[in-house]
Length: 496
Image (cartoon, rainbow, N blue to C red; front, top):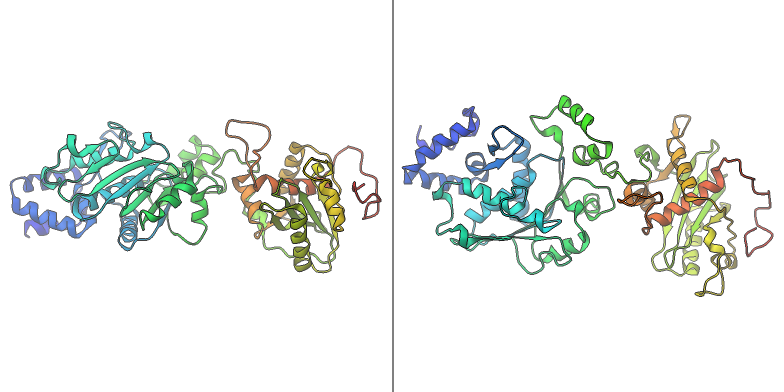
């Protein structure tokens, strides 16, 4: 077998990849012919370059310097990344932690930087300290320097001098002019350059995600978005579930060195939200600050309204952002949330018209009962009428109870966990996208701690609607019950 053919083989023939590479470099050191053959082979096959010349660093291991020999799932990911770069399309990679994907993408960039003309790349992370800090192997640019240092001299760019071509947030290939640059998250991320591809590393944790992602859109045809889930209230999750971006999912179970015993060990060391975020690729459970941690897939469904049962409309009067949630109680007392409507800079009278139009379309011949935000009875300097009075003028007569937010949250939690004939006590129709997003992390406590959830539109608005209705219809307390009255209240202005 010719020497070049021997080293074209896959790495499986050598049980020790370190010894294998040492022998390869020893043979090539004194042979310019073999060096040329190996360079040509690398240019033809990026996988060959990885398996024979790339290194990674893991300080947790007794021998931290490790040959980067591709596992099957990494080879699959490599081909997807290569295709995204070559054809020019965006690619989202959701992953478990510690799967080598950041290293993989960075070294793909370095491969192009070495062997392809006109291949500039841009790297991004949530803050500059994660993009580049010399001597810190956890940063993106330092990983590239590390692998570059391990390459044989005859593979490094001709004329390359570290002090001249290796700068903060910038690596230049003097032989072909290729540049790899870095930047932290900002609203103009990547705007000033033109790139073969752009990396958004750990994107769910970026500030200014929307602006940064949009800003790089015209700078490169290929945006590589990488991360572990952090709830659904971020651009990463929106892209993942939009159906408009090609997605690659890399779960820990695909790693040949990780099995159920390993996972059971991690379960003893990690909390539920840590497991969901770091290992399970579970968007629903990945936020520790979620208010309703017991909301599950069982609490979603495809619902039809029950014609013989009254429909409850629950109103929240946000400033130019009103909301209304429609629900019913079935014969077993289960709460069925059927629809939602969320305003965007609407006047209340305009929004109410939309609600009534939806009622006529979605709930024909239904009888309605209306509950609302207690603040609807208050006057302000912005209108001569209260919100309740505006609704009354349209033939809508809501009532309200003055109940605490925490009491309402606890009652919703109880209904979520309740089982009535083996069915959940509260089910949300899948069309209620904002309410489901609120349950799955949009409605959350402040990261710094606090007893009340954050006031974030639209999640607080739809959740307040649900809370008013559940407290009005399902609250079982010892407080004095409301006096019975006809469906339409005697005083049409106050609702009493």
